[in-house]
Length: 150
Image 1 (cartoon, rainbow, N blue to C red):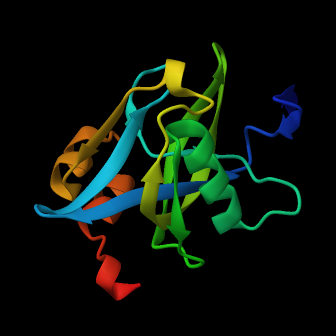
Image 2: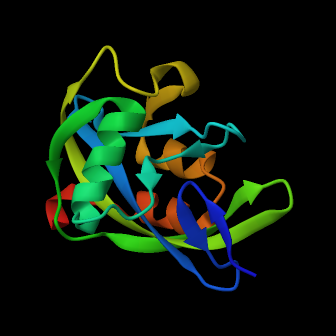
């Protein structure tokens, strides 16, 4: 049975679409990616969110990165892949989400941003990021990420 959450109707029988950014920088140690904790479960994730009206997937990913982790930069218009996970919506309900991931070459990290008080951030190597995230498909995307192939 469909239900209303966050002003959207979700049908638990259908796969829901989300868009995510994979924020990264090149530094003296090679490549670093940015992870954040989810608000409720405190798992390590990447910034992501529901589709936004009149926004493309890469635009949505860019906005989510700015709001959730305070970073801006050049976002790829092409996703590096897709992963799935089960999103808990309420105590008794969840949906399967399919997430398109867009790389974001970070040029600025703000000192203050919208969700600063409810998130923990960490810059780590792709290998460490892959070990921290729970979703095997996301871990594989991070491990295989090569910004030179964009």
